[in-house]
Length: 118
Image 1: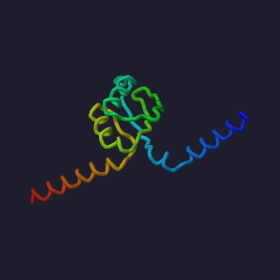
Image 2 (image 1 turned 180 degrees about the vertical axis):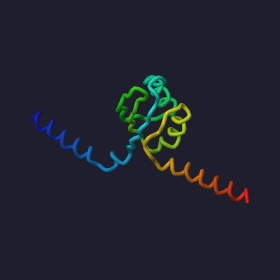
Image 3 (image 1 turned 90 degrees about the vertical axis):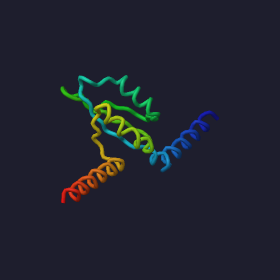
Image 4 (image 1 turned 90 degrees about the horizontal axis):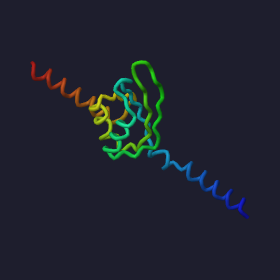
């Protein structure tokens, strides 16, 4: 009887893990920081202060000069997290929709400068 209940549990777990809603809520964010300035405790404190729920955090590569980190987070947290990471000298390697908004602002500002200099 125990085996049947255990196999039922695994079937339910497999169904839940293959639901589209589970995977749609996650976004991977790749960041880089100089090795001399990087402390994992500082990064986790920063993420905690931003109220970001971390699904996973991986140290991808350690080079002589820098460390690459891969975070898996909720995409709604990116709106505030990306500017905060940049303020603390983290380089955001992955591209997200939040970056497009900043690029458009820069484009509009350069157009305005051109217009005003005529």
